[in-house]
Amino acid sequence: MPLSEKQLIEIRRNLHQIPEIGMEEFETSTQLREYISRMPQDFLQVKTWKTATLVRVQGKNQSKTIGYRTDIDGLPVTEQTGLPFASKHVGRMHACGHDIHMTVALGVLSYFAENQPACNLLFLFQPSEEILSGGMQVYQSGVMDEWMPDEIYAFHDNPQLPAGTIGCRQGTLFAGTCEIHATFIGKSGHAAFPHQANDMVVAGAAFVNQIQTIVSRNVDPIQSGVVTLGHFEAGTTGNVIAGQCQIDGTIRALTQENNLLIQKRVRQIAEGIAQAFDCEVKLELNQGGYYPVENNDHTTKAFMDYMQANDQVDFVETAPAMTGEDFGYLLSKIPGTMFWVGVESPYSLHSEFLSPKEEAIQKAVTTIVGYLEHRQKDVFTATY
Image 1 (cartoon, rainbow, N blue to C red):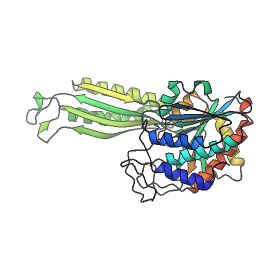
Image 2: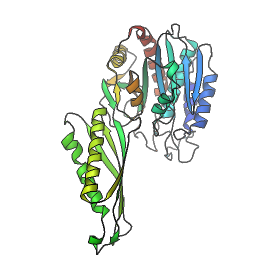
Image 3: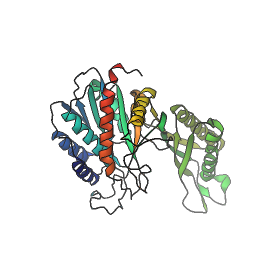
């Protein structure tokens, strides 16, 4: 029998207790493979790559494959929920709800392990969504190549939506992100003799101020982007001129085109500051695989049409969010759709108090199984 709601909740609580940081999900991946091994194996093939697990469910017609991805890593957060099944790993927590994601994926997989699908299904249990661009790493490793899906789906839990509610939209769901790490290097000296030094507090401050003009004067006002510099560190005491300044931040944009535009302007401003203040700059812009999550028009229309026509589904069309997700990289390579599943909590994603409502799990499994069964009828004639 497919996993019951009681079993799913037990699995979720077990996984919640063992969160691990990206590419270190050894206990998590071992536990996932144990759950998968207990399912009927008639239609299943399993491959592994580092801490990733790929499960192919052989379809009656193997000419097409639908992919389904879940992330498996936790965050460096100290849990404060007080739950009896709270994290056992000190300083680690499933504060982004990936324990919910994994549990739903196992529930959907358990159904198709007993009910052979019309086409192939590929379940990707992906490591390191939060850091190190795990989706990009898995794709570039080649482990997916012989099982490459024709289209792919994934969801993220949403504390702001009622438990089990499905949210989606055409176009961009999540922003693309890019880390900014800028080091300005001048010359330290005595506060009384600025002409004998090269003050990097002043250079850094000029960089911060000029960065604020990028979105307001370079990005189409109808579109969206943001540059936030959240870390500025320079100097040791008030009467010593700082010879070095470290500034770190992030870029968020709803299209890859705008993300690259903002990156270009950050680089130009940094180089201009270095020239203007006669100092050295070391600039690192690290986007990795955190592309905008841009939903495919055709798969998303099919997904939203199904959800809106299903009386058993609570569906809402959502606005884009400035959060990042490395599923965007996979969507840049494979047509597909990402969506929200509501888990109703007063606390946000990444909060040490986040406690998703578990009734969302069975609702999500039922909804996703229903959609995948429905979609199998169309995938053979799908165009993208």
